[in-house]
Image (cartoon, rainbow, N blue to C red; front, top):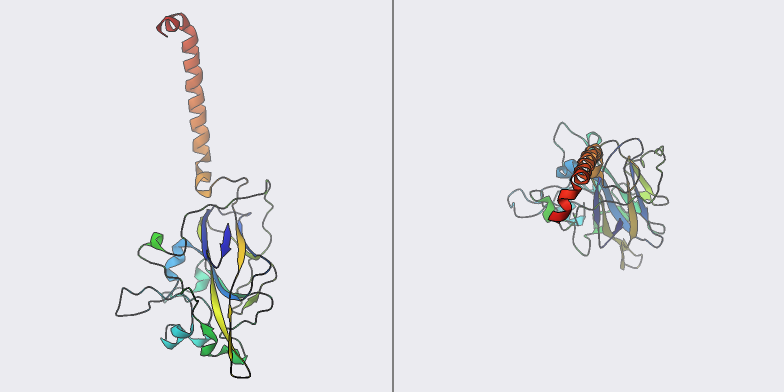
Length: 268
């Protein structure tokens, strides 16, 4: 599947096992900074924070930006990252969520952990096209392109996945190789990559901004071989049994037709 600033989220069902994983590869020429998240759909409720306690019509806020910090929806230390809301007895380690700031070569990361002068609240703008809004009550109404699409597997043989998941250190990742996510649970997985606009104050008082522009591909690798949709894989045994039943009926029907061919031919 393709992913870019125009198609910020892609999803697919994945049948997990020893050989299953997700790989996110960005194309050369990608630039800027983005907030990235990988999660299983059951954990989607933890994404974002309520924008208003009094106005239920406002959508959630998902990215920690300048306005979000000023509204006390997140802290300056989370600037540029996804915002999560967990109950008291749960943390991100208890979920399927993987998240990080990703920067491309030639881009200086701006985050709450940065020691540069750019790490102030003024350093991060909202995305020019607006931050993503996901309707928690109706996940299929999301403008995040929540179309149920199934990834293609272009290899005839799947090697065991021995590569560990890309570490989630809390610090920005300078992209140099595909981001790898090992799957241990069958489910419906989504990858979100949201571009952010970074403001760089100049020495002469000017303000230069960097808009993220990226494109890439997402590989959803199932446990099994081939290009069968993950949702169909558990039905293989049923399909095989039905094929044998249909074959038996077909053979029986052919035998009866042969035995009564002299009666059937005049009728035809």
